[in-house]
Image (cartoon, rainbow, N blue to C red; front, top):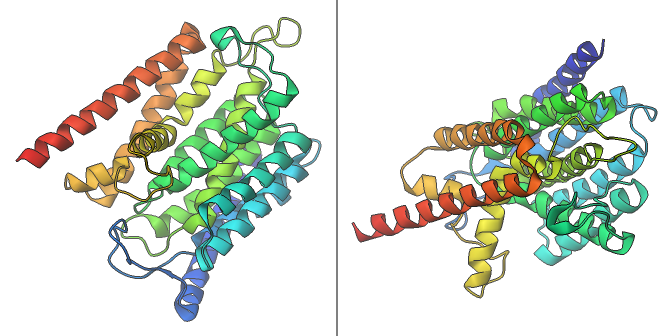
Amino acid sequence: MEPFKLLLLVLSTFSFVWFAIPTLIQAAHNGRFFDAPDHERKVHLANIPNLGGVAIFFGFLFGCILFLKAIALEYSNFLLGASMIIFAMGIRDDLMGLNAYVKVFIQFIAAFLVVYFGGVQIDTLFGLFGVQDLPILISIPFSIFIIIVITNAINLIDGIDGLATLIGIVITAAFGIVFLQMNQLGWSRISFALCGALLGFIRYNFSPAKIFMGDTGAYIIGFILAILTIQFMELNRFDAITNSNPFIKSSPAVGIGFMFVPLFDTLRVFIIRISQGKSPFFADRRHMHHFLLDRGWNHRQISLFLAGMSVFFIFFSLALQNIGSFNLIGTLILIGVAIHFFMEIFKKRNEKI
């Protein structure tokens, strides 16, 4: 019965977005709400409407209203309320622009709502570095920090047609399937509500894009994925009394594996910028999609490649879940370092030619 409900949920959010997007495209053209190619980091050559996040958010909200009952997910009101704050911030940023530090502050408020009132928090390090339970004064700010990092990670990879949408589809589908297998129906429905909305959007966002999701869509996707990641980790934490045999072993490492592509890309770029004495929010062409664009790849090839890379790391982390969180995280870090050095070496060789 539940798979049938999930199918209806995906079809509902898919249909909502599918039919809403043409209206938003027309409205954007009438109101001249465009993402203009006004500096070197922009990879599109024409004015493209950037209101796609409006349809994504309301499609997601529509699915949650129809299929998410309080009994299926306690404190879901805080999750939806906080996502509305993120939506309002994104719309303001898309239409008028917002300072990066103001956006981080607003994200802090939204994250605080779901962490403190909604109970979405990391209260253990699962034995990593010898640390088990975290005191609440550390758990709350740490959880908020993780939410802000993942929220911005999705926004930062949203640089070419279809990329953030495809990555979002892959990760939400993976979380939805795992939560369903865990019998966590509320979280499974949250995952598939967003997945369906993104499936409805990809038709218009895949290269050549007719509309962008804008910061509204990217921040909403990132915010929901951050919450799903934390809950995935917490629901699979080992407890000798209440959960002695978690469904997923090494859940912190597996969660990182699910989010590997956006997290690796963001942390890599931030580390490079900080090491050069620049702000982590400094705009440049250091992202993986820029690297591949400079190698002559087109938008479709890059989006499909990085989405496929995300699929690989999801299966890779699930396959190696039994080696322990410390070992799996170490393996993922080593792979990330190898990818970084490959990119840097390849880039320097091309510059010499």
